[in-house]
Image (cartoon, rainbow, N blue to C red; front, side, top):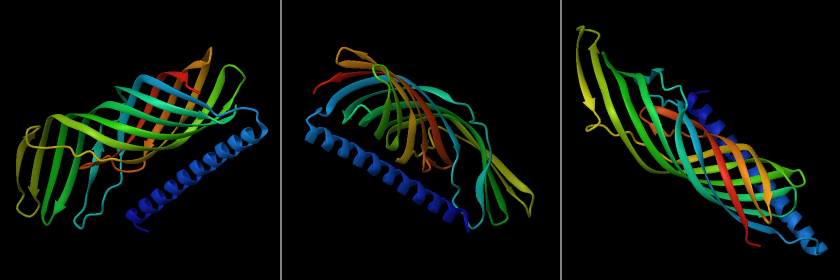
Length: 258
């Protein structure tokens, strides 16, 4: 079983799991809403909200495409979480005291220190790229988050669901040192590429978010503290092949409109 097939199979399984989980929570949300409607107990509560907070993100080694001559990342030193900021807005639908569904749109601004070596073999020649630069990356994140809640006044919420990442902008600052060596002739060359001559391509895709939120009521509204972890299910960058993982630490305020 090739790495490509394993990756595609894992991605397919994760996407189906996320889809089925979302449908299950939507069905529970609908069922609770129908019961409340027919029993005349409660109407669905609708809230709009606003949030801001800290983003801690890093790249991890992603899926490497199989090249006929070989290619990959030998070493990557971008192992630390880098701080950034995010802000967003939410629509929260509560069908009961236990189940709710939230649609969330966040704007993320991230910074990554890219220090790595990648290599490729083309015939008798071996080419290595020693990169040392900073990537600035911003994106929109559309999240669909079924939520299970417990507690009477101060509520604890368990959150989980898919998100879709949409790149907005990216820029680089730094350089890449390219070293080539011909194995047969034992000759080579070295040259530098600065940020005026290379561009880091950033792509969008789907990922998974999960976390916990604590709600504190203020009259009909409520304020929340929340921490979520996210993991991309795709390569954010293709050269080199890197995936992303991140934490969102947020302060949120919800206003009831119905």
